[in-house]
Length: 213
Image 1 (cartoon, rainbow, N blue to C red):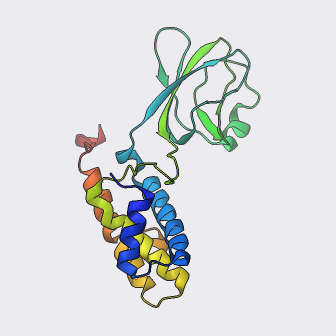
Image 2 (tube, rainbow, N blue to C red):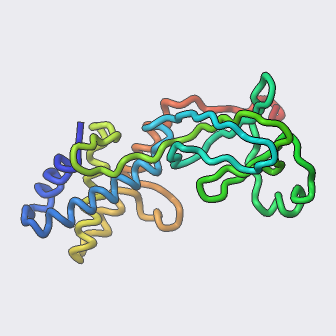
């Protein structure tokens, strides 16, 4: 079970620099790398949580109290059954729904941390929200959610960031080992891609039936 301190010691040993100045830079590098990994692998590392929110008549939004990193599902219920709402855009609302009377919401979009409906509810109902919760920054005694078998991924990213800060020439090589040569173009590779693939292999793959049905 890794912490900021244990990751920092490993990086210090790898870069052979235990000075106080280097330690401060390394800690920041570890924190930034950890947040990046959690953001990209959170679905498989953290899992989702649910929150039920009461929606009132005529109010077109609800405000979750949970600090969601990513909202994956929003469902609406005013009688017995929940109905999943598709995600729409704010532009869709103003183009198509802004003049509509209150009714059962048929879609939602996010505005900051609030969930807005395309139609303000005509009756009180319940909104069920599920998603990933924002994870604590890796400080103090906070335990990393990254499994120990992927410690090397954290180290590669942290070393790359430390070397980049130091202006060391091989920083780019460490970034390539960590997340591949085309990360800035949106293509993840390297050890990070291997980690994502392994974690994803534990999730079922939805395959379309014949003719896409």
